[in-house]
Every structure is written in C-alpha cells, then in structure tokens.
Length: 495
Ligand code: ASP
Ligand code: MG
Image 1 (cartoon, helix red, strand yellow):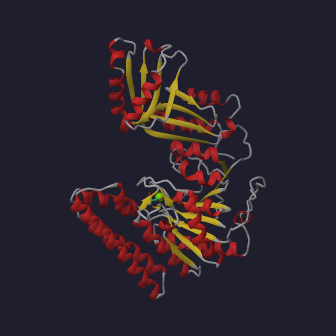
Image 2 (cartoon, protein in one colour):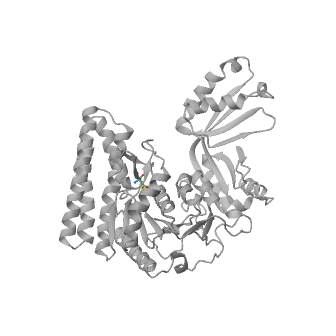
Image 3 (cartoon, helix red, strand yellow):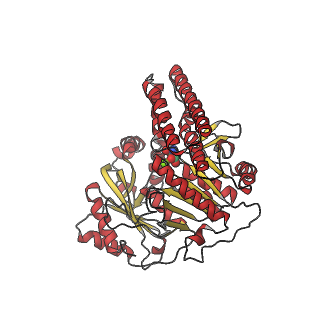
C-alpha cells in the first residue's frame, strides 16, 4: 500500500482538487491491479527495493490531506484576534471558509444528497469554530490547548471534502479523523506521536477498510491524546502525519504531493538552472530541510526512516514528473555535492578574549546562557587558538542572547578576560549538502575558490564530522551570489 499526502496548495482550488482526485483514482486503480507504484514509474534502482514482512499489510491507498492553502493561518489569526477581543476575524473567517469549501463541493460533486451532507458538516464544524472563538473572547485568553482545537478545523473541512470528491470520481473513499488514529502526548501545538497505541489504532481502524477496497482520507496535522483531547503536530505537520501513518501500516511508499517538481538543487528563484534531484538519501534530506529548503522537516521523516520506507516528493501540478525519490542509500555522484541551501535572517555572535585560552567551561556557560533564552543555535565554530567562539542564532533572538551573555560574563568582561561580545546582524548561512562529500578531498577548496573568484568574503565556516554539510556564513548582500557561484562550480544544473 502507499500513502499519498496532499499539501495545502494541492487542495487549494477547485482545479487542483480535481487533479488530486484524478491522481488518487489512478493510483487506486494501479494498486487494485497489483502494480506497485514504483514499478509503474519504471524506477531504475534495484538496490532500494526493501523487502518487508507482508503480514497484516493491506493493498490500496491511504490519503492524507492538509487544510486548503491559507486556512490554518486564517484560523490561528482569528483565534488570536478573539483573545484580544477582536471578533470580526472569526465572524468573517467563518463565512469565508464556508463559501470556499462549498464552492468546491458545488463544482465537483453532482449528487445532491452528498452535497447536502457535506454542507451540514461544514456548517457544524464552522459553528463549533465560532463558538470556540467566542469563548476565547469571553476568557480573554488563548491557551495552546484551545488553539489546537481551532487550528485543526481546516483539515477537518478539507478531508471530508476530498473524500466526497473522490467518491464523485468513482473511488470508494471514506473520511477518517486522525484524532482516532494518531495518539500523541499533550505537548499542545507540537505534539509527539506515541507509536504503540497509534499502530494499534491504525491497524484496527484502517486495515479492515482498506482490505475491503476503501480508500481512507485522513486529516493531516491533527491527533489526540489518549484521553481524546485534540492536539496538533506542529506547523506543516501533515507530512509528519503521512510518515506516522505510513510507518504504522508498513507502507511500501509515502508520497508527498506538493507544488514543485520534487526537491531542487537550489532555490529556483535564485539559481536559474536549478533542477529537481531524482534521488536523495535520508541523511541528505535531513540536512536540506534543516537548512531551510522547507521540503520536509527532518522530524517528519523520522518514522519513515526508522522503517526504511521510501519517500517520494511529487508535483500535483505536473503529475507525470518523476519528482524526487528519497531512500536510504543513493548511487554515488561525481563529486558528492547535491544541493545548496540557505538560511536567512540570522545573527552571528562572537565571544572573544585572550582570557578564554585554556579555560574550560566558557563554551558551556556560553551555550547555557543561550539556552536560557530558548534560542536555537544553527551553527557553531571555534578556532583552535580558543580566542573566540562564534555561533549563529535567529535574528529575532539576537538581542536577548547578547544581553544574557553580558550578564553571564559580567565579571570576565570587567577583568578583560573576555574582551568583547560582538554581533553581526544580517548574515546568511549557505550550506553545501551531499552525503557523497564524505571522504572526497578537495570539495572545500572548490567551494572557497568559487567564492574567492567572485570576491565573496566568508565570515565563518563549519563542517560536521558527518561531512554531509559544509556551512558558510556570508553577508546577506552576498548570499545569492554565493549560492550561484557554488551551484555553477559543481555544475548542479546539469545531470
Ligand atoms: N495545515 C497545517 C499548516 O498549515 C498543516 C500542513 O499544512 O501541513 O501548518
Ligand atoms: Mg502546508
């Protein structure tokens, strides 16, 4: 069986939902004929076919769906406004969302009974949304727990809608709320799945459906605690839902349907000849996502990786494109460099002073102070002279981190053991990514000479011992040029 996850843009309009229905109907047909999707696509890689136990597995397709594009933001904004006594956004939101979903139903579903049923469902969900927001206004307070109920409404509208559209296209589809399937802890807003009860629920609820030829259409993003309290898996969490469900059911493949032709070698808005990569390893996609390619959050692929389930990133708007296949091991490339990404809006902070030499504990104290501000450290570098440690944090946390460091090292600053706590705003981390760089000499040299030839100054460098990522800090103004220069030097635009 395969899991097919459709993101917000894939279900954003009547036309795109219509394409989704066709894509799913085709896949359901192929599964029924017993033709695996990978075979159908004519994959070249024999080595990636992982044999898994077939016990308890069902044929067929499981669909996971996000809210229509922009809906989750509308819901969250409305709830936040409600807490600040502004009731207009949720009132407007309710009617806008009703119209938006009803228009699609009106255009894609002919059966009057089906349409009326959906209309009532939309109405009930949105009434509940309005009631929730009203109580948020009365309380004047929005808790994470309350927000999880509100922000999950979008998927609870889009999934029943897509299920009905699929039925209108001849697919035996049935809506299932993930609150019944994905059991999580109570870390509201960012809940973590509890796999043991989740696996049991998924098998009990979904396998009989799939064995009888039904295609479940499951809400992405949402789950519930063991006591049934609604939770969400974090923004963009529908990919995570797909991986959790795929792992629970031992899927053959998890497909992430989005609005681009897979994972690109660089941002196509910056690099004209950026192209989609046919194949990536789990390790590479983790580095890429971490460094801002925003394709798949590393956390979201973990359940798939643990079970070695291949992932495929595909384009709803160009469904015949083979997309990117993400597997455990990939074939080696000439030089091992696969992609270049960037993270922006960062600040470089440097703690420097001769009094740091040979003094243990400075790094620990530095990062404890940073952690107290709950700032995320994206990169760290310290030269062997030990006269300075520099690290990178998101710009919005920059000031607070510096203030915390000045307090932490107040005594050392007075005694000039630490001479300065400096900061450089407006920097970008450019990351060169590829597992095949490991053990390949000369890559760093090529990166630096490409940058040198363009007169681009590198402020700091870091490479983890995994050697799958070389990170460079450059000024914001030089970042795009740096990305283009590295992309060119490794000829990533041509296969
Ligand atoms: N609708 C949710 C969000 O916008 C989840 C998702 O799209 O993956 O964050
Ligand atoms: Mg999304």
